[in-house]
Image 1: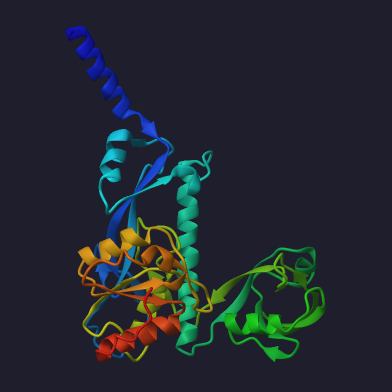
Image 2 (image 1 turned 120 degrees about the horizontal axis):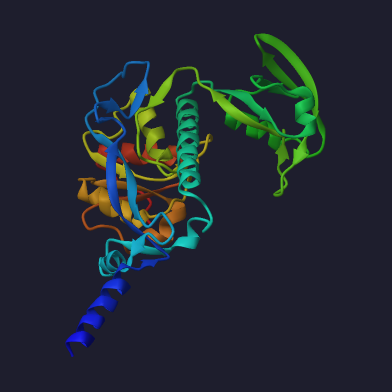
Length: 334
């Protein structure tokens, strides 16, 4: 009996220490994009604010356990299973099984950098500033023949490129595969080149290049140990608050999440239930949720916290104006 009992205990100990192919997501910390972390401002701009900041705009995160394949043990899995605030997700839905830790970290960091670039461009264009669109890398043979790295796009068929949104609108007027005249600023010299455009899989007109945003002012981010693209919308709102005329939060604690592209469209993210819980824990009164995540939000809103759905920076800024005025009852919900 003693030997059998010991064997049972031993087998149970081994079983509960075995790794399982899941990720455990938990409510992570939140950070005020208008404030500082570890003595460093989260958003640094070389222009003084025109108003006093009286509230908070908090980006939200998810804590993740088991990011290395099989590193989540059964004990931690069981704890997460019985905790309503946590979520268990099959590992293969998030990461390729053969990816390395370095590859995952690099991907997450690249997504964060891309998100910050898009947030900066979207925020400045929202404020009416011109954001130059530069050539980072020509990708196709046609593009390599006429573009150089560092060229800035100035016109399409004689129509001025006033920013990324403007460039996209101009390309929507061009038939894929047709030839266009592209105006460039090349090292301070005006240059015109002819380019045969390409076609994307969904039928859009392509220049065949990757682009960078040439910002009219310098923006830096003091964020460490956070990856992925989901803070984009809150970064953009933080920039608009710091450079624009309005105190967006108006003394309230506002949290949110969502990707953002250079045109200001807010997109879906993962782990939104855990992010709402983390926001409520850290005092948020209002949460800005991407409309594309509404199926996950509905019925899971933390008690006492307003959850407003948004699809764009315009939506988010209007929502915050309504919150400041005390007239938020009519704002769209999930």
